[in-house]
Length: 141
Image (cartoon, rainbow, N blue to C red):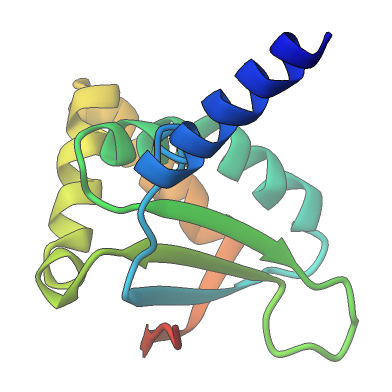
């Protein structure tokens, strides 16, 4: 039993010391690009569905190709909130931030190569939400 415990302790110490255990974690970003959207009246659930079915596949493809570190979407259900959806893209640096919109557009082309379907999705999004604001923020570390 003592040998097992000693072996486990040694492996854990070496693993933590070398970063082996933490290697699966994403490196933190330095910049966040925050988009504030307001779902149109009566369209909150429809816009949530749009994010899941149209937006997330594009986000996944863009992230896979290195466009950003991570994305999180927050929803405000407060009736007097100026926004209903806050989408936060965490980015490595300002260069990645400057290229985010093009990277998302390129990912959209890969996910949906049919131009008429992309236009239909863009037209649909215009009926579901309005852009309130966009901000580039530094992440305090």
